[in-house]
Length: 313
Ligand code: AFP
Image (cartoon, rainbow, N blue to C red; front, side, top):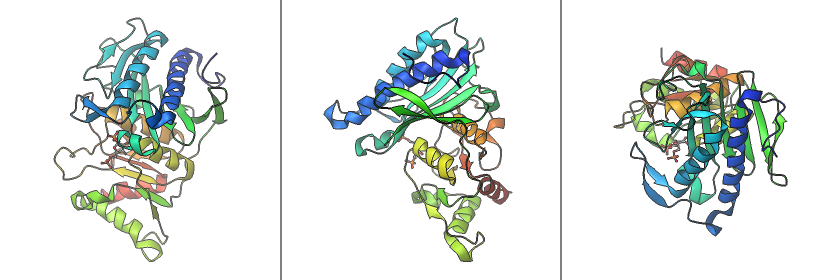
């Protein structure tokens, strides 16, 4: 029994998407049990970039790696693995994944997610991923929240599926998500204000100025600390998200990783009519120079992203 309706999924990619969804449904059940199961938020070590690994990070990575090996994935690049793994030397695809994004929210019952990006594999494992983000053939996220959702694109719009808890299958909910052009909300970690660049500060101050300011309207503020939760809200009702570079050591390129966070979200957002930049340059025209490289990210309603680019001169 497939884990997702096959109708709108390209046949050659179906085994990969089905494996992702089957694993996502299993993870959803584990996450839903929370403290009734093992301690999912317990620190168990550090990943290659020195970020603390939670038990669920490691569990999710192991589950996705095992499920994708027989599904046609040759190269597997994970936030939780230092180097690219070769799963099936005859497989046609290269898949990058953040198995569990938003780990800091595991123990407080806030939406977390899985983010993935798919390329046609090339001979060299790392070269499969260090290429223009526009060469992605698919990208998506699974959100583990009040609903478990899959948003996915194959380059012809952004599709939305909902996991039906009664059947354990992902069912189509929208053939074309449309990101609203106008925004009423903006998202940025405001505790970093003193570290921001002048253009970022200028934009946030415009948002704070309300109806008497340059925007002539009141904006609301949201910060969940989970990229998948922010992206789904913005895809659904518009808004802007900023994780810019800032003056903190190590944040010269922001916090988010190009290969398995920034590039897939940019693909999904642009396919829904939004825009995604590094503040000024379209993400899809950029490529990572190293597997875990960071990249500043601004995305959301087209008119807001354009305003932020204008402020960056
Ligand atoms: P974790 O997976 O370490 O919780 O990081 C989540 C994340 O990569 C992204 O999902 C959030 O938008 C962002 O980090 C939150 O970063 P801050 O904790 O600096 O606000």
